[in-house]
Image 1: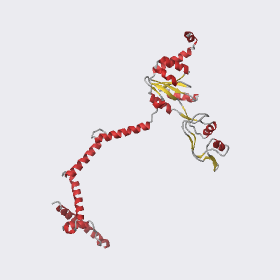
Image 2 (image 1 turned 135 degrees about the horizontal axis):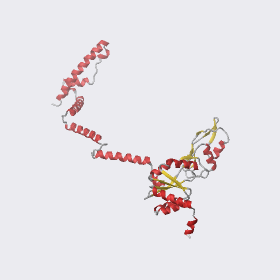
Image 3 (image 1 turned 90 degrees about the vertical axis):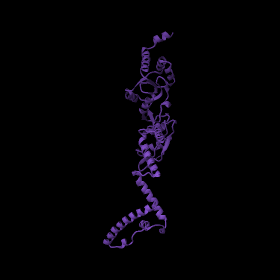
Image 4 (image 1 turned 90 degrees about the horizontal axis):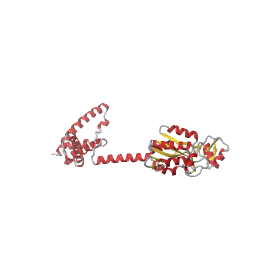
Length: 340
């Protein structure tokens, strides 16, 4: 009986099945995609766009079932994904790259009555290009708050007209198209992909690249911090480790009061700062004349310079600089007495 059926089966069906089997064996990945609602012209454009990396083959679902069944047990799991208008894609791209390629190939399309919104459809407030007329009533009947202002039709407030998953009415679909709002996407929707080992579903292949990139950056940052903490030199950490080592060495030298050329200047500066703090706190009767003069030079300004004529001011300024130099030198000598 089966032999009789095979005799009467059209040859083209056997040829179609053999082509599918040959393509499945000649490529690394086979994918089942939905072609529902794709206009013929756009489908041809997608096929032309992918021709260098993928082969798209449309066939009857019964022939696809037969070809997959004859290709081996592994591909039989793809049966459940073959329903409605279906095409097969054969490619050497890995399933993740194929999924991303198909996602990027989709284009906006107007909504049709009865279709479910893929996401919240929002109409923004603001002026439209329409002149006053019956369209005001059409907008309002579709749930869009519209009015006439300054001779133009405006949307009075931003409104979500349909939430994700809800059906789009015929009235709203017409209005959205007139407003040039295209909420739908037309393209190939991957249902499953098989790479010879694993069958992937869309949820497996959808990757939030920004989230993964953020995790990657965070991992690098933590690795660099750990490398610095354990003092493990790498091309990314050696400069920071050298700076850290130099800083710690300088602090140690200052605390140990090691008289190295780079440290000596800082030690003298610190000593002078400590000494001046001590001088400021001591009463004058506990200081010698040099320290008293140094203490007074830091807090007093000659009053006569402000009131002198110009030439006298210049002379006074020169004398003041000379006196400050002498006082500074004598003051340093006085500071030395604190450390004897």
